Image (cartoon, rainbow, N blue to C red; front, side, top):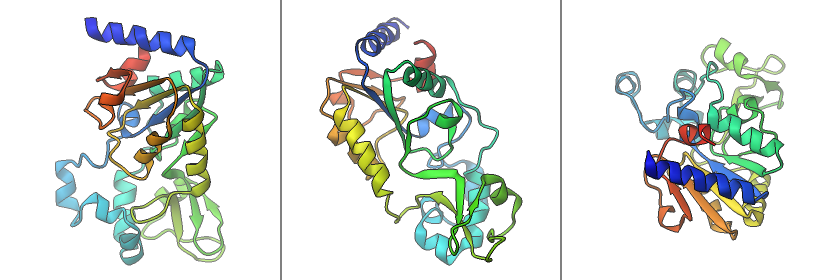
Length: 242
């Protein structure tokens, strides 16, 4: 634990010194709340589905096989019992204390807001929001869970689509622009729980011009060599010690 304690101490001093911190996170922030990263596919998966998750979660597949898309989506993408963990709660606390300016997340589970964060930029949307593709009517996540097959709009019968960015779909330009500004203006950027493998989200890191780059992730990332502080540990465990 010696080295880890030193790193935690250094992270604490960075947080104490600066008041324009931005957090950029991914699936690793949610795994400690019991939400599996769908890329680390379990054995059951192969028995249940004929396609890899990246194929099923694509715009093309959603259009061609919406029934199969929703079978996977309900089974593998919705975890309504999940609760915010130490990372979510500490980030909300840092925001309330005037230290953290924004959370930029690749996650779609809404746990940052559930943990109390106010300024959350959801690069890939949220499973908690769903809209009719015809008339735009809003539906919550329970409507999707309680429906069968392709969920249909009560008003017009159109198909109800999750407000989630699928493969082959573009990211929301306003969310991307806001993320660029927050990262560009930050003094400290903390990257946590992400392998930085998914683009264009991972490319946002290039806009950072500040003083301290902190990387907290169990596995190596392409930015480890650039980090002023690198902590190779689960992010919830790290934040629980702050």
